[in-house]
Image (cartoon, rainbow, N blue to C red; front, side, top):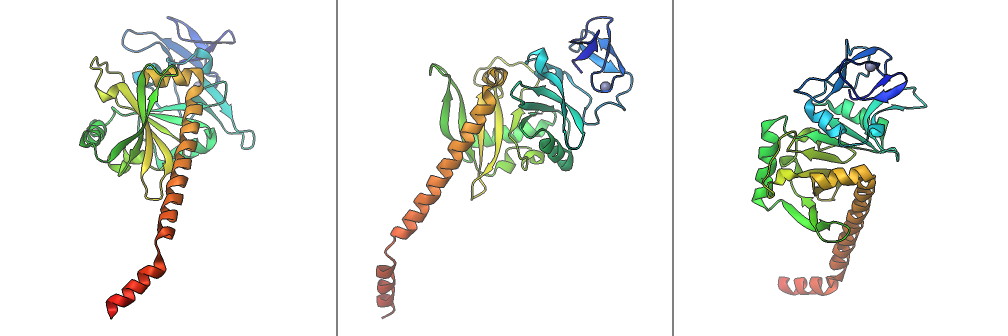
Amino acid sequence: MLIAKVNGERCHATKGAKGICPFCGKEVIAKCGEQKAAHWAHKSRKECDTWHEKETDWHLMWKNYFPIEWQEIIKYDGQTGEKHIADVCTPQQFTLEFQHSHIKPDERRSRENFYKNMNWVVDGTRLQNDFKRFSKKIKENSDIKIITQIHTVDHKFHVGNILEISFAEEAFPKDWMDSTVPVVFDFLGTNSITDKNDIRQCVFCLLPIKTSGCDRYGIQILKSAFVEHAKTGSWENFVKQTEIGLQNMMKQQEQARIAYYNSIPTRHYYRRRRNWRL
Ligand SMILES: [Zn+2]
């Protein structure tokens, strides 16, 4: 974990420091090695948040993109008394959960129900095949179509695309297909790449909405732009606006389809058919 209480203040770990876990109240010890980012460690995590998984560098990297005030926020459910530590929670109560390891569907659902206004960020580098399958789909260029381009506010830079995805289950890890909230895949992880054309410079967000034909929608965006938006609190709104736009588009397509079928002159058609029989 990144946050512990030292003399009542929320602090990051510094060499030799001891602190108190804000969640379980047990003592935690600062770990400030050269390999891993500075963090706090419990002597035993057993009595702490059961949802809290063993953290990797990838977790610490993602949490550290955000201000200390937003990191590891304890969230309560007033009705059930349940409490958990949100990895990152913005002042607008929007939660980001960083998930490295496999998560069982019922645990995934209970976290989605608990946090409600949340996005997952998933480590797409844990399983080697995940990125292979995904990049193959992108290269095939048939099942993933660009609907709209995303630009910076001043329109100078193209930072991403809104995507329509057919056979999404062949592109994204299947564990995440039924998520009720947006899932952001990070296929770069803690690696660094310099090739600007490498698609791993982008994160890919799978939106929960589905078309009547079971196609899915997604947002491809430069990781730097995603972090920037998430930091200003505008990512959450951007996703909501995108979903509203896509839902309107689906409605219009459906209306156009109905209008097209209604425009077919049925009487004329049947009369002709009758003639064919003669
Ligand atoms: Zn604890």
